[in-house]
Length: 136
Image 1: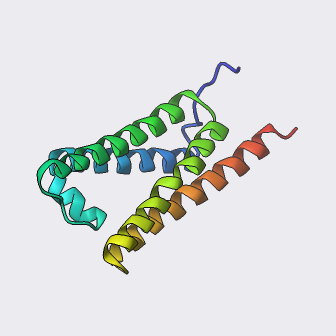
Image 2: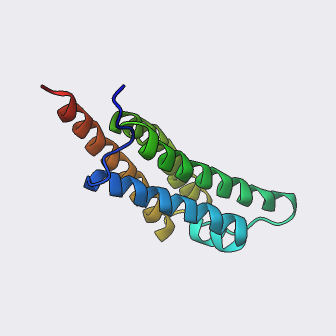
């Protein structure tokens, strides 16, 4: 392993990963601090009773993912970050399906679909960058 760890600070791909991290940390904080607003943004009404506590769980999921990205950006390489982003596209795909099943077509589906596309495109970009960096 080289002495330099983490993604290069001056690279646009690094700033994209840091921006994604900030978005997901912000979403996590929103779901923890204002769960009903988080639910509205997600595209489903906030449940009542014990079901309400799923909302902070969503917040913790988003907060943890944002922090994973931040840690990987600082401590790992582009291939590791790309792998996590690629695997994590499962979440917005599932969110699209959940919102579609619960509400039918909704503009909120576009938010989840866009999130998945950004993650997938970012993963592809980072995979390509890691391949070109490892070529002689």
